[in-house]
Image 1 (cartoon, rainbow, N blue to C red):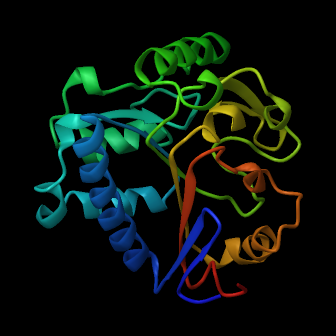
Image 2 (cartoon, rainbow, N blue to C red; image 1 turned 45 degrees about the vertical axis):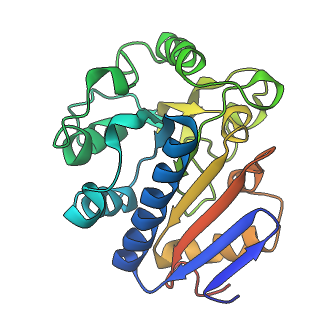
Length: 249
């Protein structure tokens, strides 16, 4: 596969390393936000967890991008969350808030964190689904359609908190759910495939050699990993992959 490739609604960019990945993804995000804000006046974005987004946040905070992004036009959500307080280093929202949202002084009305996820994950997921339905306009079949959703991929092929052999893989009605992950002995809050596949633009950030074996199978359409179920109804998918993760492509 070439460094830049497109297949149907799937666009792939192979990057030199994690730093290059963060740079290219940040520039892509800045360009998209400006375009969507110009067309719609508002941009709905769902952030993801993991280590690679932290590099993205750091890059977005550099002046050449920070100063040209219309931050006041963005509504921020999170596509999945651990059931810990936002103050925890494990919190996806907490990391985004500490590294980017708080330093940028994003207004409270633009911030949509999960609520009480560390106290009652079931109620929290229901509350968050209401939040999504309230602030994100409907797309195909009336399902809210995010303008941009960031996702990652684990070495086991999971994305968001939709892990192999979990109930979340079969959920078709809910948009946000509590998903129990046996191997972690933990609950997670996660967007479901119904909501993820209603997005206009999905951006994957995938880095690290431990992802390479599964990623090669995913791109060969193995049909056995959760991440392969990300097929937007009317949207497109862009993959930013570092050479370590993409070495078998």
